[in-house]
Image 1 (cartoon, one colour):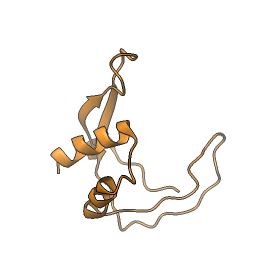
Image 2 (tube, one colour):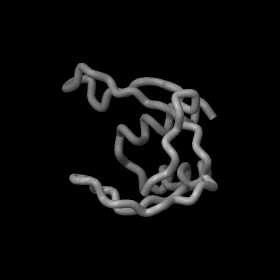
Image 3 (cartoon, one colour):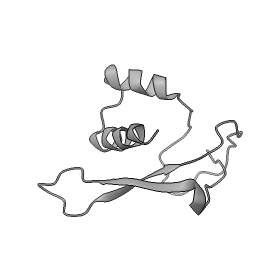
Image 4 (cartoon, helix red, strand yellow):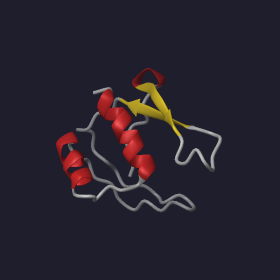
Length: 88
């Protein structure tokens, strides 16, 4: 899956997360990117080691429902989404 790469002006650092402060010293930056969701997603050659096979857009409402139904349970993803929701 490939969409137009956001420019620097379309990226905003919204916070930093640490998956487990008992084990990790480093934090990971979380960025919010402004993208055109109407842009067509095109197939491209798979890169070496790439695990994501396809992608799909979800509305914020649907993502929140997925969280409530425990369909999204990765702690780092939940932390990043929480930061993103605070900036919408």
